[in-house]
Image (cartoon, rainbow, N blue to C red; front, side, top):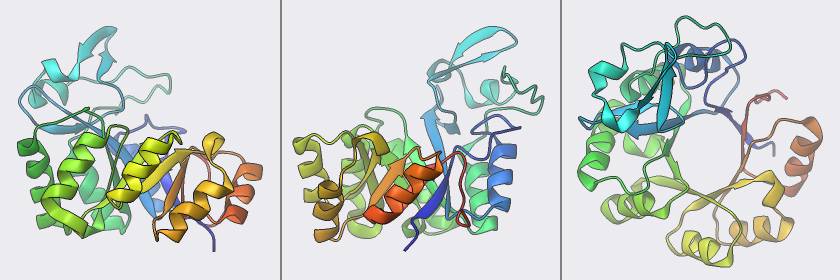
Length: 231
């Protein structure tokens, strides 16, 4: 079976990544899901951006030091000359996913966000589309563990890892899928997780040779800037 394709931060060859236009482009494509990165503002709103800071009109800003209303008014500096590039709210990204039938794949960027703010996010998601229709991913285990303890198997989790035995063991014990760099993946790891009925997402897959190799290995998902479900 072909792995399910996840659009990495939206389609951003002409629009800035992690913006509404990039997500709308991905919504038109043959993708299973759309990945986005989320941070918390100073006043505890979830917004979509990859880094903890950003540039606007040549000035550098830190997301955690600004309110939601301050952030959404600032145009993002970018090399694409995308004059509509603004940091979106997570709600607007989720609505695009819902309307297009794409699965949201949400990377929680803060290392250990308060449970109160995670619950605020999950409550909104549950009311909008159902908590089981979203995937949460993170490099740090703490937000994923909080979600697992609170919601049990209702939530689909993927731990972004390097293949250290301790992290793989943690992911298996808490029934998390893994999200792993294609450079670090081997057939043995694929087989171990599949034996436990857990799945593997591979990032970032942008060349056809790698895609075909991963298909042969039997990975379940790819996160990509290039390919879609028809590739």
